[in-house]
Amino acid sequence: MPAVEERFIVRDALTAEAEAAIQRVADKSEALTTPLPDGVMAWRRWGGDGGGGSGKPPLFTLHGGYGSWVHWIRNVEALSEKFTVYAGDIPGLGDSDPPPAVSYTHLRAHETSLHL
Image (cartoon, rainbow, N blue to C red; front, side, top):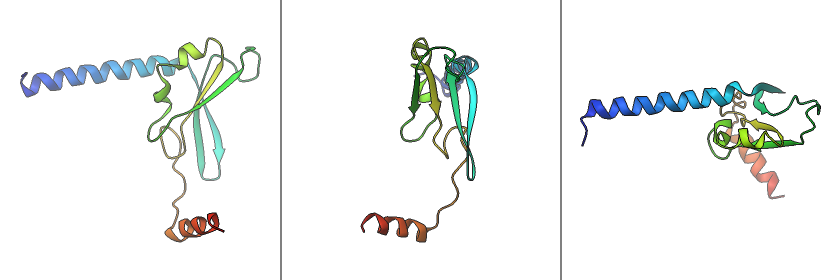
């Protein structure tokens, strides 16, 4: 088993390589935002100008669980050959602003309204 220092060097090298790959794909995108009442939702766009001038149909993606547009990193370049790809960051995740704080009372009221 490698020494602790050697494992950290390997991990740091892998982290730097991953960050470089993410930056390479991000550099090919256009960063966009959608205004929300308490901030913005962040998007990335590949393969089109957004105005329909590219002739490519739009394809919208959202990540699952916790994450960001980076969940689509292995797909966006290939998909952008035939589509204008939009990858959004769900509010509170990635580059999007967090949603406003919700009180327990509001959550209970919403839950109650679902059962009416």
